Length: 177
Image (cartoon, rainbow, N blue to C red; front, side, top):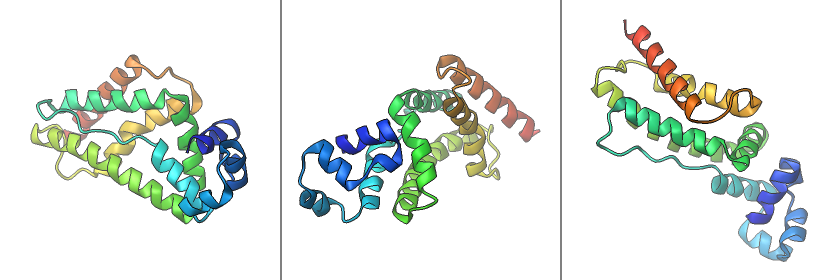
């Protein structure tokens, strides 16, 4: 995994080949194939290893504090070079490789479930309409963060977390009227 990750960071997804991983790691090709039958399986396993799983904020937190904690965690992960290089590669490769598309779906489902729990807290507090599409909410919340990460147009930090949460809550308030 370390060799494959280094290759991804240095040369992008096309640099991750079985031969390159064997050369970088010193592991025999037969050992590689015992773990992963194809390059796509290796790349899918690498993404599973690299993309973070987010945790549901502590049970006692209200909606706004939960939202702020979760967005802060997302921004913290996005700030790392590994994440910045991994996610665009994952998004590009998922359109061409079924194994990677399946990994992306699993990762997205895990992340969606964490956000759904936070949105449920907002629903309980009367700040998130029960009928709202939670996938849309996730897109509206994380979209600006992804743009900031990909284009490096806005620094990823506490100010972005605060502005994103404030704008998201303002949008919810308007939508609820």
